Image 1 (cartoon, helix red, strand yellow):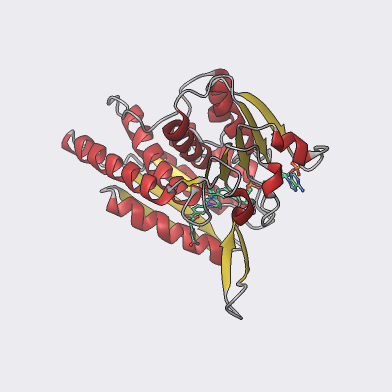
Image 2 (cartoon, protein in one colour; image 1 turned 90 degrees about the horizontal axis):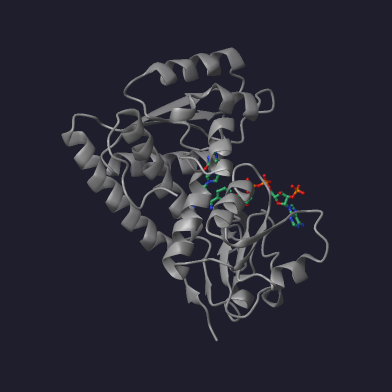
Length: 298
Ligand SMILES: NC(=O)C1=CN([C@@H]2O[C@H](COP(=O)(O)OP(=O)(O)OC[C@H]3O[C@@H](n4cnc5c(N)ncnc54)[C@H](OP(=O)(O)O)[C@@H]3O)[C@@H](O)[C@H]2O)C=CC1
Ligand SMILES: Nc1nc(=O)c2c([nH]1)NC[C@@H]1CN(c3ccc(C(=O)N[C@@H](CCC(=O)O)C(=O)O)cc3)C=[N+]21
């Protein structure tokens, strides 16, 4: 059996259309949603993502504000910018691209952002709301994965879900969302014993590690839904001097066993950006007391 390949790119395009339609509605009510992205230093991968985010934001009819700070920017200067954006009524979402240089602290940076504008969903307030069943701004990548899973599986009650990776950005919020969907959730990480066996029990297998092609075909339960979040740039096998992106899952092997699987690229990545737009719109609607858009939140 060959798995259905989940087209994240096409699904994300649909979400972006929905966001654009809702943005038009909000604009008619006199408000233009705005997203501010802060990039510290010159990480080439981050430059690419920030560029994608800017284009997608403008295409959805929202305002995009970009701030590029030098790699050695003092914390006080970064915080002064965040304070300004917190106070700016044209800005509804603020995202500081990670990783930041070593002299800056991610936790302190996130804590400085107004939780109502924290479209990454990383603040203590939003993480706490998600864990306790409140109306959080949900981290974009887990939200995107949830949308793909709901679309394919509908009711996930009682399914066994394994999430590999326990980061604040992805693994922990993904596990919370799956728990909300009534899955029986296992969180695996670098200290997990017999990871292959743990994975073999999963109806839903989500991998977010950052180790190229770590999850082999015989780790996958036949018919399982496999969501591959990891992105690693590796030397291209056929084109010398070129690189390509691969996921945490050995796609060629897993596609023969799984029921459905996301590819890399074209799977989860495009959903992340679509959900960032969705979160910015949601933040804008909440701030202005407008009805929250349907189908774009957790
Ligand atoms: N597609 C997208 O939009 C996005 C993709 N990503 C990608 O997802 C991947 C993970 O990102 P992120 O969560 O931020 O990464 P982190 O590095 O913060 O977390 C990695 C997790 O993987 C675990 N891990 C490491 N080695 C192993 C191993 N051998 N076996 C099992 N678990 C292991 C770690 O365990 P421990 O806690 O024990 O150290 C940790 O919990 C990266 O490739 C990143 O690029 C991330 C965000 C968005
Ligand atoms: N504060 C913060 N929030 C983030 O959400 C965040 C971050 N920092 N730092 C880095 C990671 C990574 N990330 C991706 C976004 C889009 C793609 C994406 O669009 N990927 C395309 C391919 C892109 C390409 O070709 O390079 C795909 O998978 O098809 C990937 C990864 C967001 N992150």
